[in-house]
Image 1 (cartoon, one colour):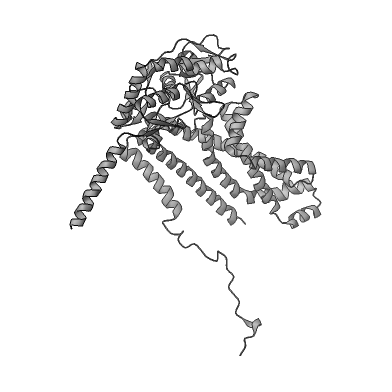
Image 2 (cartoon, rainbow over the protein chains, first blue to last red):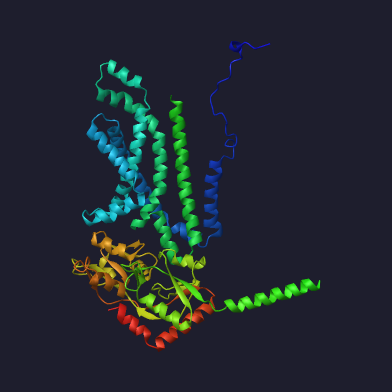
Length: 262
Length: 247
């Protein structure tokens, strides 16, 4: 007896993944173990084991501040560069489009460390840029290219109908872009910008090569005088870990809020 | 049972033999940070040359071992010795109390002092303290960096290589560099890019001696190298090397 193919029971098409991750729920999530574990280990080392960990924790805080300054400055500047580049990449004007695409291609093809050296030492011969500003500019120029791609993808993810609707309401193209497309695109790009922020925070350790006294440089200074390499780099790694985990959680919460508002 | 006994006896004999064979090393690996001209540097033919290199070759020859030079970044050069990546360091390492607590040194082989280099436009500075409120550079983890740290009100900036500190001074980001006197002379008096820009001020203000560094407790190697150093000094080879590199 053959079944009638048209009268089968409907398949339940629910939300969620085909293979849900059941382990990442409950009290002991990976994030919690990592974050609170790192904080606990730090406190234990600083106050439980004390020598030389306490000294190291005392030596590096101004480096954390410098790391933050570089990261924040660079992310702000990179967002501006990224927005301009992203708009350039979708522009109909062949010259603007070409310039933006060229910028992205060139920057993505050069290692960040080389760019940092280039902007600091090679350009230092011609323009006198202070060290902190050089570090920020070098990071921003690099990340601006990646942010450009984020913005381009974000703008292109807005359905065509939105533009058509705006135009049919009598808006000009620019007006439609500013008032309809970009506000929606910003919502889309916020989480990836958050991820870029975390990547930038980690990559900012590269500016220690410029004698900018960031967290890593402070650690290296301590280690090179006391020879306690193992202890120093353990502390440095823990501090970076706590920082990145903290921000990734913040971005996760932000993402949830944005999705809830849909 | 008998077989087992013979086997263990043979094994023990072999072990004893191999121990005596390896007691005197045929070749030692020595690390240097070749960014410290004229003491150790990479020349245009990509060869590692300099005072320390010639000196080490002479010492090794007198001690009857072969020495292999390994170019290693200064920041971490001690950690590499701890990790056993090489047997010794010859890299203009000043013998200090802090370093002696962690490592063993050969007897001193030459003496130098720290000195200050400033831009020619600076007419007044004579010592580090004259640069109060300004940034002064040195290579990370060197005695020069420690000397700057001692002076209150001066901001220390550390560099991975001393050449980068001089380049930063040329770019106007820092206002002084402190390093070993022969190195200062090389950069400020001989390098054509810097000759018209920098000058050495005052006299060297520390008394330091270089030694070859080995892992704490490696008495055999210290003895071997000291034997070589004594022979080199007795033959006055060190003065020859000195006039060749340090003008």
